[in-house]
Amino acid sequence: MTPRIREATERDWPAIWSIVREVVVAADTFAYDPEMTEDQGRALWMVGSPGRTTVAVDGTEVSGTANMYANRAGPGAHVASASFMVASAARGRGMGRALVADALSWARSAGFRAMQFNAVAETNVEAIALYRSLGFSIVGTVPEAFDHPEHGLVGLHVMHLKLR
Image (cartoon, rainbow, N blue to C red; front, side, top):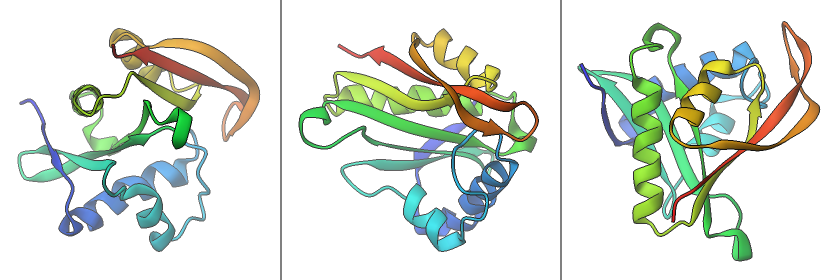
């Protein structure tokens, strides 16, 4: 079944927090503090307008989430960015692809000229393969910028896709 992507609501927060907490505590894909509190997580993840936070719903269960926004303010506001998290139990079922495709559609509709991911751990091979399959390229790598719990210091890729 194809996941349904919809706008996140405050009622979704407990499910979103469960996913965010799982991913952040693993400390193997996001450069977020594993000691982050729920309030800090909510402030970081629940992006307000003109940005957007979404959930991927499989049946009635929230199995993934994304947020999207302008990568920078002012002269950089024409480039979008986004973050994606999928519950470990739901991985490999198209949640991530659906979330990324929805974010790209949003960015195009909102008039962004490109989408940029600032910090993709080079060990996150599944995400990198997904992003590349959707047209993203690696435009640079910051060496040893991420301290992976298993692999030690690894690079962080900057990935980019021109939207128009």
